[in-house]
Length: 425
Picture (cartoon, rainbow, N blue to C red):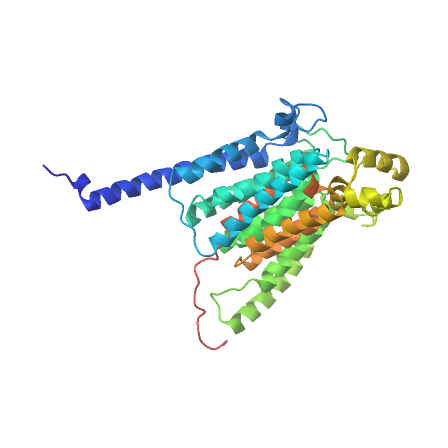
């Protein structure tokens, strides 16, 4: 007796349903792991383990989301076949190389007796590469859905930040003392809220949302950036919006019509943007712009480079104990922190290894940006300009992984549409 299930068509349908079920399962597991790592802040982690404290066991220095991503990686590649496109292969190779070279760098640091950097290297950079590899364990449609979930959470974080700024009440715990209240949303710091809200603007433009939905999300993210009172991020968000309006093609229009439409939209954006900024300023969300941009915080980021005048060439070339450098910064420069990624990397690794580390990061992001949409490139430039203005790239942070995940999620452009032909009219 035969059954339809044993026929080739039945077997194919059964296998198709199985693959769909596995894809859904992976979507849920990967999404849960990413949301755990990206949106459970260090302050929450510190409430049940010594995550950012100097003391504590090494296993406490890794985020629970990092463990989840590492544990899920081999499972994801074993439970279903992985199909990579021609453009995927170099990106996967770059992620693997990135992990291998970082492993060698950390091994060298252990040999040199300076393993303090291992915690944030694993928790930020190795985790980011592992998250990127997880994205290639699923197909392009699922990648986009994961990207949509992350963007939705970043937009929600901006919305929460706006509410916090209006009520001067934070949703999540925050341990740092601020001279004036600044919201954090779902992030660990006001500057992170501002930076990632500005970055998300570019990725929203790379989605397949409708024009009204994109407009609403970008408006919300811009206001969230302003609410965080992250001045550089706010300026970069304005530049990103203008760059998107000017450079991203509108393929539904002929080129002459596109130029005219962009000119009109740009004028409207400048006019409405001016009104919006005036309203935000009147509402107190741009109070840090009331003074000069060249204030104490600005000069602190310049003053930190005076530290090289208090150390010898050996410390610069071979690196040294960062805590000892921090003590010099406190006593000689009068600064409470080292808010400079280049300075931290030079003293942690030594100048040659710091340059090698920077080269690895550039190599990874340059590879991920291949064949990417212009809006994703704008988002990446926004991220690095904002991140390099402080120590965001040399601490335990999910922002690098968020960038990797979103670049992979929105690597493929929307289906190409032929431009309509005809006169400009």
